[in-house]
Length: 281
Image 1 (cartoon, rainbow, N blue to C red):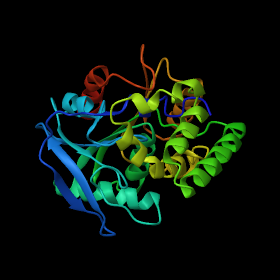
Image 2 (image 1 turned 60 degrees about the vertical axis):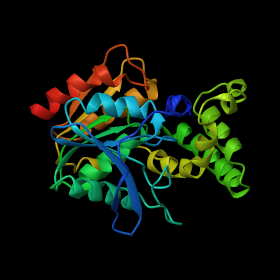
Image 3 (image 1 turned 90 degrees about the horizontal axis):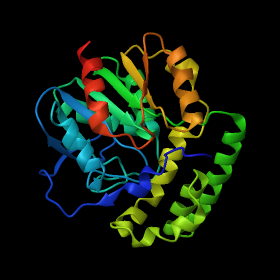
């Protein structure tokens, strides 16, 4: 699988700086969801991708950029950081986590999802049309063809086995190599800041794989009624571009936008004015 998450996980490093006060909501199944609330303006739920949480870079800087124009709810997805978890993972449970955040924000909010978080944002838009005002998604990384699907299933089984053996570091290596990282680079990862915290997130790899392991469920997603903008990077992998175009062609009323000179690790400073324009239309 080529750059499904475009190695954003390798750029996530724990920051030693100050953070906003720790807040929490309780999801429908009783799971505690930790979040930070920054900025002012209309509420925006920030949904991150694989192997990151709110105390990692570049998530902190992304949230700070977004908070220039929004009240940003930057949260730890379940199983990450200070949020709780359950034995059984369900996509619906993650949607309910976002619903709890929206309710804490007053009952309606904009949402922004990046990578696997973009897939989760679309699921939320489909499920909560009366609570999501508009959705902006960047590089949703569904598999784009049957060959990619079969390869991803092999990766999933390998990661499952490694996690069962508590080989968390090797599980992350397996994931990163499967999405395009040269294996030699994985030997450098333990030297990066926050690696020990990153390794703790290894079990959540299966959550992101569950979100993205299939071809886009076009029939379901075509029923999205919430205004949604599907953005992708000019330099993002071709597989991701194909998925974005397929979604844009089949979700009625959606906007499709290529972001010039950007890859999967998009610069939020470039994305922000485009997001503001879409939300204000």
